[in-house]
Length: 128
Image (cartoon, rainbow, N blue to C red; front, side):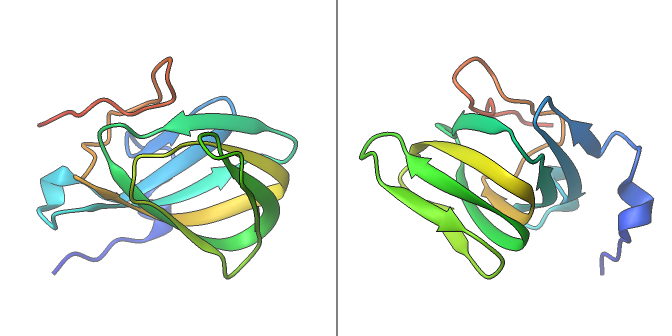
């Protein structure tokens, strides 16, 4: 059984910070679950473009307000608590944050914990 508390992750190597976001990574490849699980905060007033070419991601909003745009279709969806979006087709997308957003995110294949966004907004496919 794996049991972790948020305070166990804060300010460790599993607490990764970017310019517009921070990711507290609860479950990673090393945990052997077949997916990774992240608690992510995106900062108010920011815009982040991402394109997970190597991963599928499901994202559930528990706090905040913003919107996501599918950059292929141009379709824009509001994000508020209770919203889930799944990037099942590796969609290039942009998240625009009105009020700090807090997400619970699942990645498949699982992240190692060392990933940060590259120039395309993607995570590289890493192995331990």
